[in-house]
Length: 256
Length: 156
Image 1: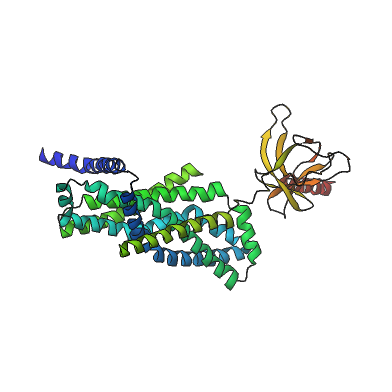
Image 2: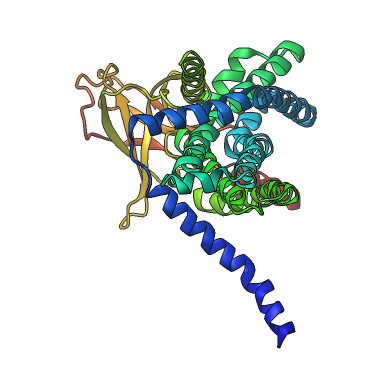
């Protein structure tokens, strides 16, 4: 009897957790007030998790753009089609690499810090103290971080893409001496605003929401010990990376 | 208060930078804003075969883009492809006996519509149809014709 209960718990555990996560999201969203102080805290969190992630995103974007053009020029040169490099690089950036890589970097850079911060607040009884003061910690602590994440990820994706295009320009035009006019005109005729660009923004919005929700939820539900916070942080990275890639597939099949 | 101000300033810069990056990407690296202008008039033409002509393909006169393909539909009675094109109003002096053909840029490039202006005194207006049309050359058909011809030639 006990063994079957345990097995049942193993199966129902993730389902229960998903349900708790959903309720957590609803409780958070019900707290949106558009009041001045709330906007202020969202802005502060946007700075902490968005602006502070900017440097790593930009460096990574630059080198991803360089390596993408290096690889694709090598491949395309064999067919005498190295003019197409900008199309290949930018389409793959807008549709896949930009949103996904930014989301993965964001999960590592900002998702972990959100979970650790909230988990530590819980371990040091700050959350309980807030409840005693009749402040809803979900709306005061979790909501601004969640909203800031949803705002930040698309903007970070845009900057990742911009830096990647810059890296690609530096390599393709600067090093490989391709013609810059052809490079840009290929983009302006071949990359579609609706299909490629807007689709990528939708993806990054969904990724931002997913990662931020997982990060705040895991932080909030962490066991209030040092080990508990550590586990929660690890779980945030693992689960949000996996979910980003799963959602990427689902969204791609809807968008195309 | 001082630290608060700096944080707000930095996050404001971040938001502005992000939006600037979005706008730059959208205008420089996509086809957004590459339309032929807001004021257009539409004309149509019927083709037996349009090949792989797509929506938004350019419409050119003498190699200069004057418009784009608006829609491609099939006439359910005559089974011809009806191509609707929108032409920028600044090119409003195209003769009414202009011919249209589906052309290819390069050997394997994209399809586009080439207009060859005629000499009629009256001009095309919104809703007109072009009657002189030439269908797309389908490479496979040409190759198979060529192979078939040489094959039968050798037998005789």
